[in-house]
Length: 118
Image (cartoon, rainbow, N blue to C red; front, side, top):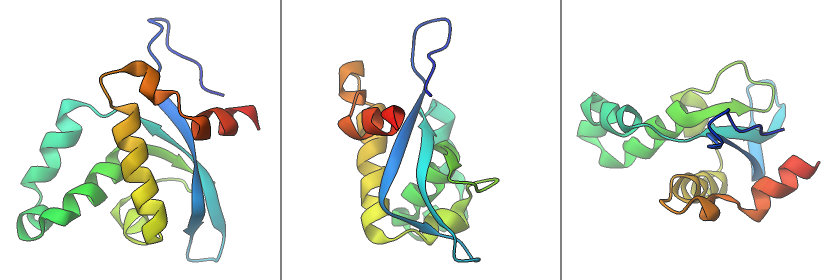
C-alpha cells in the first residue's frame, strides 16, 4: 500500500510489469515500486564510464537507482534492469516519466491504482 509521507507528497509508486523479470532461478517478478527521482539520480549516471561510452546506458543506471522493489528481489541493480524484456524496459521508462512529471495528477496512473487495489 502506498502511504504518502506526512507532507502529503507521494514519493513511491507501485507498478506492474507487462511481462515480468525472470531471475536466474527462473522466478517471475512483476510487481514493483519506484520512487521519485532526485537531482543526483539524474546527474550521477553522467559520470559513469558506461554512459560515457554509450549514452543509451543512462536509462539502465537511472532505473536501477529509482526502482526500490521488484518482486522478491533483495535489490535491483543494473544487471536486473539489463535483463528486463524490452517491453518492460519501455514500460518503466514511460512510468518514470509519468511519476516525475511536473503535474502530480499525471502520476495517478490506472496501472498504479490497479496494483494498489490488489
